[in-house]
Structures are given as structure tokens and as C-alpha cells.
Image (cartoon, rainbow, N blue to C red; front, side, top):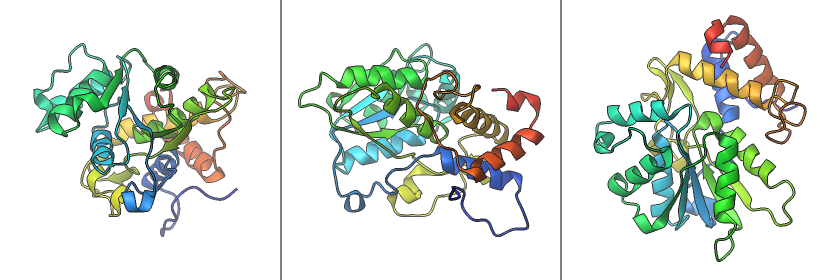
Length: 277
């Protein structure tokens, strides 16, 4: 199997390399850039999943203003990560005037898009009941199916750690559809390990033809380690995963050998509270 991880010029695997290897795999990108000249097409709608990663908002707004889409569906209720979104908004120098307490993630994201990123209210639809990525997919597709003209393509933007699983959930929900909607994933950035944590700056990331700014951090090292280990465990199609051989929440996902090797090294050294998310 071809390797999925970026090549590293060092004397062997290290924690940062393994985290970036897994992060690179999780942050699915079917199109490497959202520069309109490079994408060469439009999408019927952008589905933006609520999360604590505020960079998703910048990428979604940029796609709207660049004419890649003219409608956005923001999906997300109150779930296990909502408290992280509340904290991120409170700590943001511009966004802290948006109320978050007791509100669905989609409602918070919609307010931020409209009040701070110049996306008009009539371009944004919200789905506020979903509490996990499977429901994000299920309820988003239920919302989209009656739209006229019919939706045939979706640009999907999600927290980079959950981009691949969310895409798999959308495909799984359409597994018996006669004319499934084409889902195109674009993670807002590819996670990089820095001295500050793990992150990347969406507005200078390679999504728009530049190198990522490695000064920002979306997660602490511990938080990202926990998320990365949890995602690979869920994606791995065995009895403990979410695929057909396990819980059957998603279809089969093939995990490259180098990603599995990075996962096993990380899991063997991580503290128990980081392994068992």
C-alpha cells in the first residue's frame, strides 16, 4: 500500500512525525486548493460542520465570497465538543461578542459567519439537532434532499481530525441511494505540530496556494493525541471500529500501513487517559 504520510528527513519516527502522519490522513482533501482558478468548478452547497476549530469558518466564508458556492448548510447541535467551541469563541479577540452558552454549534457558527465574515443570512441554513458526525450526515442529507433545484454536489468542511470520518458517514448514509449526492471534502488545514501545540492557519494554508503558518494552534498536544488515537480506532474496520466489521456506522475505510504503524507507536506510549477516548 502506498504511504499516506509526508516523508521526513530524520533518523527515525518521533512523536511529532507520527502525529502529523495521522493528522495528514484524517484531514481528507479531495481538492488540494480552493482557489477558484484551480478548483475549476462550483458546488451546489457547502456543508459546514460545527466544531471547535474556528478556522473552518474562514475557509467556508472564503469559498462563499470566491463564488464556489452560494448556499451554506451549517450542521451541529449540542454535543461532546460544544464546550470546546464555547471556549474558543470566548478566547477569540473578535468573536467573543457572540453568545454561545446553551446554543447549538450550528447557531453559533451561523452568527459568526453573518456578523464577522460578511456571509448574508439568506445564504445560510442551519441544522441544529445532530450531536455526532453520523447525525451530521443523516440530518444534513434529509435537509438537502427536498431542495430545488436538486443538490448534486456538496463541498464538505469539517474539523480536520474528523474530516475523513464525516465524509465516510455521508457516503454511508447514501449507500442505497439511486442518485447519491457527490461529496467533495476539503479539510480547512493539514495539522502541523508546533511548539505551541497542533494547528495551522487556514487563511495562509495551502488551501489558498501558500504554506501554512505554523504559529497557530487549534489543539494542545495532549488533546490532539487523544483525538488522533480515537479517530484511527473508529476508522479501523475491525470489531472495535465503526465500519462494517464493527458498529457499521460508516463504510469500510482503508487505513494505510504507515498510518497504522504511527497509531500503534503513539498508543503504546500515550497515557491511558489519552488512549481511551
